[in-house]
Image (tube, rainbow, N blue to C red; front, top):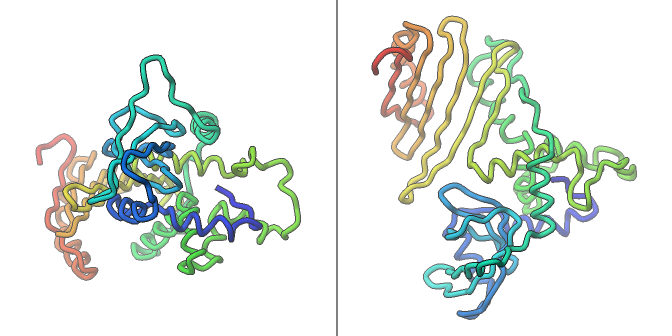
Length: 316
C-alpha cells in the first residue's frame, strides 16, 4: 500500500508499533497499554482472517490475534467485554441478537472490493537466472530477493526502515517503493491513479495478494528458474504446541526427470523431504543423490532427517 512521502514519518512509527508478532508477545505488549477495566466494553474491528480459526483484530488501537467463536469477515466490528490482562489479555465476545447486524466499516467495504475487483498479479512473476549454469547458490539468493522484494511485505519493511533496521534504498526497490515521489521527482501529481484516499490504484494487486496471504497463510511464487523453466513455490509456516514448522512445496518439470513435486519440512530437529516424480525411474535417480544432498545440508548447519523419493504410480 502506497504511503505518501509527506506523511511517512508520521505513519511509520504507528506501523512499527503494530507489526504482527507471535500471539503471546502481541497480547502481553498490548495488554500493558490498554488500560482497560474488567467489564469495560470495547469494539473490535476485524482486520483479517488467520489460519487455525484466529482473527487479526484492532482493539483500542492495538492489534491482537483472537480466537472468536463466530464466523466474521474483515471489516466487521464486534462488541466485546474486557475480562482480564493476567495472565494474558482476555475478552468476551457479545453475540449479536437475532435480527441484528454487524456493522461493516468503510475500510472493510473497501478491502472487500479489493478482493473482488482488483486485478491479480501477473501469472509469471519473473525469471531468476539467465541460464541454469549459474548454479544453485545464485538461484537461492535471487529467489530470496524475489520473495522479499515482491511487494507483499512492503509495509513491514517500511516499519523496519522507520526503526533504522533497513536501508531506504532497499525499500524503494519494491514495486510500491518505485511509485514513491522520491523516485518520480517530488512534485508531480498522481494523474488520477490514486484511490479514494486509501491507496494508489497501481498497488491494488499487491494489496489483494496481501489479504490472501493473511487469510490463507501461504506465500506463493510462480515464475521461471531460468528462461523456459517454470517453477511453482508455496511456503507455509505452522506453529503447533510451541513448535514452528516451515513447509515448502515446489513443482518443476525437468528435461531428464519430468515433473517433480517436492515437499520440504524444516523444523528445529532438521529437514524432512518427500519427492514425487511423474516419470518412471526418476525417483531412483534422485535417491542416488541423497548422500550429496545430506552433505550439502550439513555444510549449512542442517540435518536431513528423512528423504523419500517415489514415482507417482509406485509404492513408497
